[in-house]
Length: 176
Image (cartoon, rainbow, N blue to C red; front, side, top):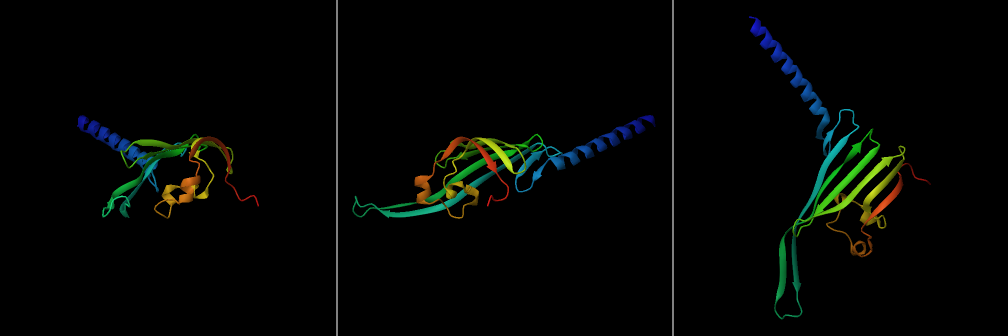
């Protein structure tokens, strides 16, 4: 009789422990537009997301150097395959972002963006790391938010690519 009571007590303790662990798990991971792992108080968060642009292309062109020989190319292509890790640490004041792009030719990974930022106030942010050089508006629109399949010839000719930078960013209302 005494052994049965001990077994019941151990089972009740284990069930209670399992209940508390599953409730903590529900608060610390999930999906809210991004997959994430986070602390219960929100001070630490890791977002994991990515992008895959998959398209079919078909190209007919005539090569003037060879008579009667038309070039035809077609197939599927992944223009962008990106993986991003972002989030915050320490009271949500420190932010970070690391983004990789994998080429469609051989799958080689390239570091695109890698930056750390500190919230000086709700409106001001100090940022440093590798970012897009803010020259053309079209270049600054993230690939995830492009409406067309690609960017314009003007952007291809005049964008400044990425740069290592230190920036002070104002995110409040307009100055004017």
